[in-house]
Length: 404
Image (cartoon, rainbow, N blue to C red):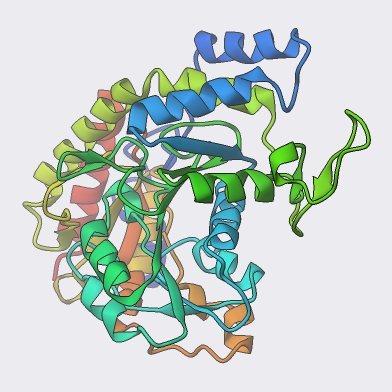
C-alpha cells in the first residue's frame, strides 16, 4: 500500500468520494429552545451571578443523583481543585490516579503541592485498576482519584474499600459519567466527593462549569469556602465579631471559582433532558458494540461489572496485528471519510511539564499500549440514524480494507 493511499484513506482508491459529504465530529452539544429560554430569563433577571439559579441547579443535581450536597463551580477543573483542597491535600502528599485522563485529574493535586502517582489501567475496561492502585500506596498517600473514563464507572467500591483500609479520601472524577449507575447506585453518591463537568462535549452542557457532590456536611462547608476566595459571610465561622452587615472574613487562601447564573440555568435546563440524552447515547453505543464486536481488527471496551453506563466517549481500539495500518493510518482514513475522530487521552506523564518533574515513559504499560491503539469516534445525542450508520460503514470499510 503506498503512503499516499494510506494518507488519503480508501476514498482515494475508490474515485475520491467519501462516505459523507459533510463532516461528523466526535462530539457536539445539543441545545434547544428551552435551554435558550432558561438563559434569557436569567439575563432579564436581577442576578447574573451569586443568584437563585445556582441554588436551583444544585438542588436539581442532588435530586438526580441522591447526593446530599452539590457545589457548582466554574469548571470541572475547578471542582477537582476544591475537592483536593477539601481533602486536605498539601505539600508532600501523594494521590493515586490514572494516566489515561485529561491532565486536570492530576494537575489538581499539583495545585495543592501534592504528587500525582500514576497507576496502570485494566486493559479491558480502560479504568484505573484497583489492584495496581493498591501497589502504589505508601505512608504518604492521602487520596485516590479514579476517573470514570468514557462514562463507564471505575470500580468505586473497590477504591472505597482501599480507602477505608488505609485512611484515604476517594475523589471520583466523574466528569464523563453524569447519569451513570454502578450496582444500582447513582454516580455522585459512591465516593467521598464526586466531580462532574459541564463542558459542551459532555452529556450535560453548561458552556463551562463543574460540580462537586458529597454527603459530608464537613466537606460541603469546605467546598463552599474554597469556591469563593476562601471568604465567608457565615457569622458562625468567623473569628472576629462583625462590625456591620457588610463584614466578611477570609479564612483560607483560594481563588474565584464561582459559576454564573446563566451557566447554572443552562445546566438545570439540560438536566431535565438527561434521561433522553442517556437513552440516545446508549442506543448508539449498543449499535456500535454490535457492529464492531464482529470485526476481529477492533476491540470493544468492556464495562465494569454492575455498570449502567451513560457513555460519553466511544473508544475504538485497533488490534495492530490484524491491520496493515497503525492508529495514525486509521485516523487519517476516517478523516478522508469525513468522520472526524479524536484521541482520548495522551498519558498525562508524557507531557513535558510532568517529564520535568521526573516522570518517565514505561510507568504504566497497559495505559501506554492503549494510547497507541485508541481512537474516539463520534457519539452524541444529536446524531441521526444516518450519522450512526455512516460511522459504522466508514469504520467497517477501513478495518476490512486494511485487514492483514
